[in-house]
Image (tube, rainbow, N blue to C red; front, side, top):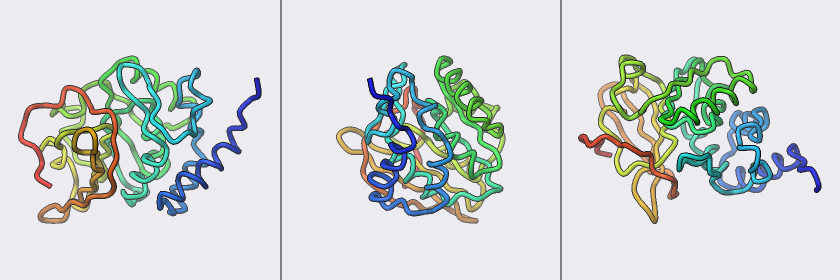
Length: 221
């Protein structure tokens, strides 16, 4: 069996999937080159690492398609001093990408098996500014809900964004999420201004919904 040339496959992915989806920020493109995506994919699926599709991770969860990860990253306009929160760690790849741009990343994963998988992947990639927590990131847990963040990424689908989540944003903070239900969801960007917030629709998509979303008032965007 022929061994996959990961470097060539990565270059092809960036040229054919990422750039053609209007991801042109040089910092984002360099981070995709720098962080080895194949090291975050289950070993039996590594031949699909750079394919334009979601990859199953177990526990009914998925790794987002490469172009979706890249586009969400670009929309956040990340800064070196940002503190980021991710809800839905999965393989740890998005947390790893965030860590290349942000000062710290806190990422929360419901399933212990995936939290352990992500932790191992991030350690292998030497991403020392990421803290992996096990829990439901959509709940008001004191491990993260006692503070505020510059950036929040929800790496999974939601019918609505629970009201508690945007409240975790600092002034001028940014949040990206994928909202709606099959057959179409919409990626959205929420920006926290000094006195209010505003939201923008980014692109249509479809992804696996997060589980155990709290039945509480949702954010109106």
